[in-house]
Length: 413
Image (cartoon, rainbow, N blue to C red):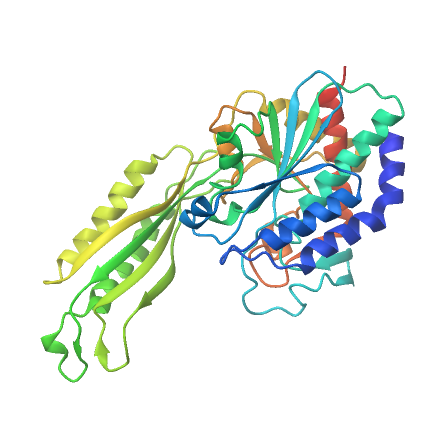
């Protein structure tokens, strides 16, 4: 059976890489979150592989309320027999390329490096790669079934487009609509570890308001930027306290805080009357989201109170809870560990990760959920959310073969 999987993936290597390259060449940046074109491309590519694809367009008012332009969620289902439903979920939306690229972020350029071939492009590691991983895992499973290997259960590919904003119109919407009822979920991740827990994330929007005035007479105005400067200084001072808090879970580390966006001012010769900034606060699995938000809000309000005639409002944008392990995650993780050990001789670890993903939404429903895919050893190695994002093509093969074997273990009669 393992030889059949390996032989099939060998013959499919070029086609799998071409599939991934097509996905990388089509932008799906979020923001702005206009991802329908990419979903339509992925649908067409999947249909050309022989799959029946369900295209679920999220209602426009729901999409716009989430801060996006267009969302079409894709579902591919294949039933092998009576048994558990296993979801393989990857996201096709990506962060914008930003600066510093030496390779075209939409070029899907394949380059020979010291450690093998790598494909470059935004989404190569996070997580268009796992569109290819999971698609070819299902193709390999169908090959096994055609050759008489008895499998019992259903595999669903869920390809969604809102992970970069939290997953509310992707996995959450799918679950709320009853479109999928999985027993196990594997989400896009890393080929060199199984991630079983994640940090949560709190995003706050802060608006500091003063009173405009002429720059020649700043004493007659209330400078919102001056107050904002004080607030941000206090926020960054709090990093020292956060850095001494350390999670007991491997890979999680300490809570972090970043001011990611700042906007304000009217003109160079006008005292700013309004400044808006947005905060990213990563939350440990054993922290309370509400307590974190309350303490951070109080810090902001206290800093602004030192500036008469200045007001502040704090609004929650995202409150993504940590991924809390659910009973049954070990069954998937052990299957993946056995597969990787047999393929490479390497025993991959079970770890937590500092980031947050839409995987938490399945766990919040009590579904055992882990992260595993064709990603790199680390995000830094692959340029995830950075310039020159890339994927080592040998990792694409490893991730695909390991997922195929693990799902076979879960579906064996």
